[in-house]
Figure 1 (cartoon, rainbow over the protein chains, first blue to last red):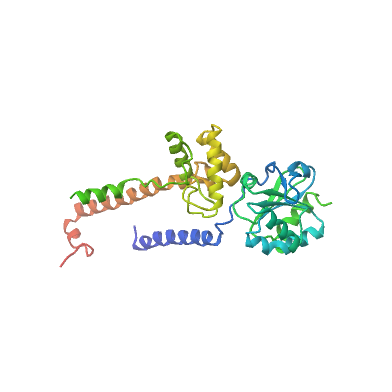
Figure 2: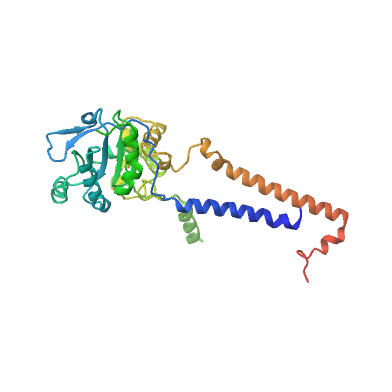
Length: 179
Length: 146
């Protein structure tokens, strides 16, 4: 083995390692890909946030495309994305269904009164049971569910108009779910 | 001497910390299974902790879920399946063996084989050099001492 090769091999191995690190460090470890994409959305039936007598469930949205947004008043990112949700709701492209996750009912109701309510309905999940079924690990999280009940996309972290236009809208016009 | 033995015993004994405020199960066997299961599931909010270690509310919820699934008589495999269907393989501290992870699982063996191969190569070449020219080895600048 020539002297030249003796330095070349560790050098190349080191470069490969550097490439791995550069790619690895640029990925956000908080973005865990959801295994639910392409699968049927988990079914649920929970109390309505505004009216404990009423039930909100997946059956209410059968045959319709909707956004499923997980939020809580304790969650800073949810406050951050609220404006974007209001804009998406007023555009009327898809209804937004809320999941109020591990929250206090009166606090959540006050939040919607004060900041505006982008949701068609909000399901109340104080135990976090439905959130586990949806693989939720940190609010806010937003899912796009197709009319046939398939999960099309998931956003982890605050929804922004940029993400909405870039990642969600193309999926909606693509599958003809807009009304 | 006794102190040394006591210190050593403490150092090697497995840590037994309580997970929840109360035991999850009265049956010691079930409790042990529960503790084992929660120690190999990842808490997804605090990613370098298991759901047994973490006090995050999600970890508490997942522990409750594991407990309920055990009470329903689910096997460890079924509980793993339940969680990976929702959170993906990332929730498991032990990555499953599948095409995507072949390289990961094979890496220790490959690295060991590579090291042994390199070592064998060096030994054979040195032995041959020593046979052909015994004095050369002594004059090797890397091994020479004043």
